[in-house]
Length: 87
Ligand SMILES: [Zn+2]
Image 1 (spheres, rainbow, N blue to C red):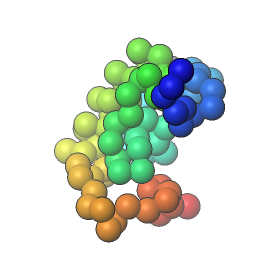
Image 2: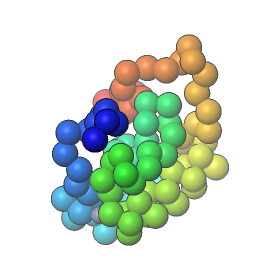
Image 3: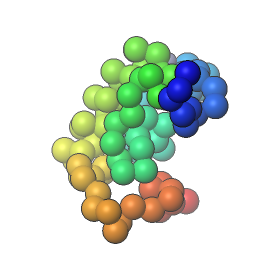
Image 4: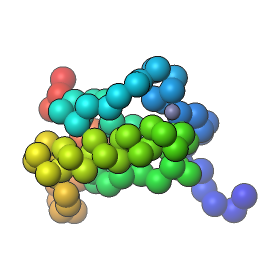
């Protein structure tokens, strides 16, 4: 593969954590699916299973509408850990 792999090993983190439902009010629940610019990561990069990817997508889209997750992040505002404020 010529493509550079950003993630070492692919597996569904939601299945690993036995997540049955992803709540949009809890950003830590779907942080694995968001990039540092709050974009929804494709399944081929995260390794999420189809079921959990759809669940996370819905949660993120609801969270955006509820202003929990921003729609766009400007270049200057990109930070290493977008979920730092949660700690
Ligand atoms: Zn899964």
